[in-house]
Amino acid sequence: MTLTWAEFRRARRRSRQAWVLLTSAAVALVAGLGWFFTAGQFAALDAPADGPREAPVLAAGWMNAVPSVRSVPPGPAAGLLETLEVKGRAAQDNYDRSAFGQAWLDADRNGCDTRNDILRRDLPDAEFTGGSRCLVAAGSFREPYTGRLTAFRRGAASSKAVQVDHVVALGDAWQKGAQQLTGGQREHLANDPLNLIAVDGPANQDKGASDAATWLPPNKAFRCHYVARQISVKAAYRLWVTPGEKEAMKRVLGSCPGQQTITATAQ
Image (tube, rainbow, N blue to C red; front, side):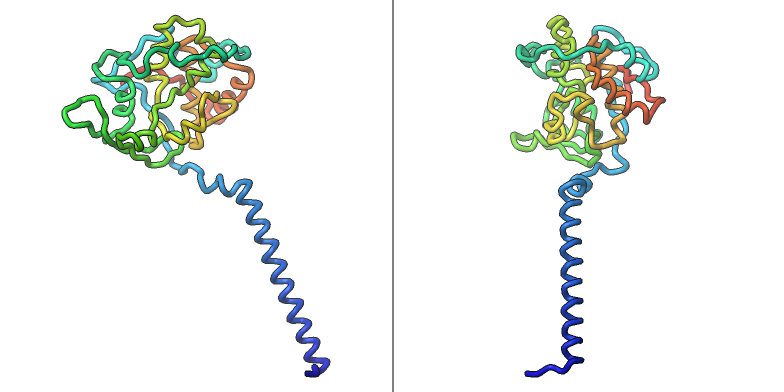
């Protein structure tokens, strides 16, 4: 088949247009993949903009404060941070969870173990196992670390979806002064409602024993309270901070200069 000159030019023009379209599509695909593997996959997991800004400490009528080494003074959290000792981590090779006593004792002597106290405190619609006034069976709440609505249901497989986190991780505390505490003081640190929050299980696992220099809640609205709570716990139990940790805390509090310390008062 013989083409005329005009037909040949039209065919060549259509061919160029097709290549331009294919090239543009390829560039867009590469750019899209680049965005996804840098920021995109994390943007999809961002906490809701209206996530919780704080978490309770005590609940009036049935929770009691746990004695700490010293009282947390009211006032700006940034000011209390300046009173904390700053130095490097101590060795962790001798850390053992048992140094903080049996997990989830009834430290406030209200008749219920600490874990169920915290679940009851943090889940506003908590339901109880039949016949019990302590054992939380189910509930839902706006979880503070991610900001998402989260459901708790007691069970071997389902309970881990909501965990009770030590705001100052026990492994972190061990490296920053807890080795000098008495056994009873460490037991109180591990069961103090000031240092405990019900949170998303995977977020808690991601945090591990990290301090503020290496992990902060994805819910940015909660970070000021979270850092102020860590400072308050460290002050209450005479724990120190590392230089990097202090700088990270100062950066967070720089966005909320009015943030106050967190004290063990009934709410």
